[in-house]
Image (cartoon, rainbow, N blue to C red; front, side, top):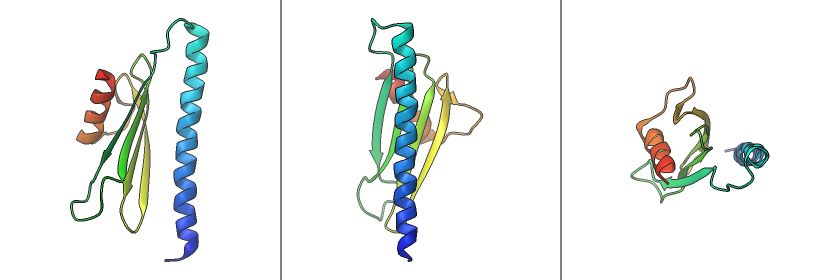
Length: 115
């Protein structure tokens, strides 16, 4: 494969992490303005898994960032030897916001909500 392909994968991954950070930072700022006495307004959970039984270890992950209303974002990364795919999905009230979620993504949201 061409080296530029690997560079694009890395840049895509870093961009997704940065967008997740910005979302988190924006919600923290909003939360501090509305209620500075509570710091438990956000629920963050990362779940590592192996979607491909025959390849590697648990390098794929789901990162869920939810606010007190169970709204936020879900970042899913599928990693194998050849490429990494990232999917960012909006979450509203604990469900996909006009988007279909897999059963694993729904389970990740439930685990994040329960803590």
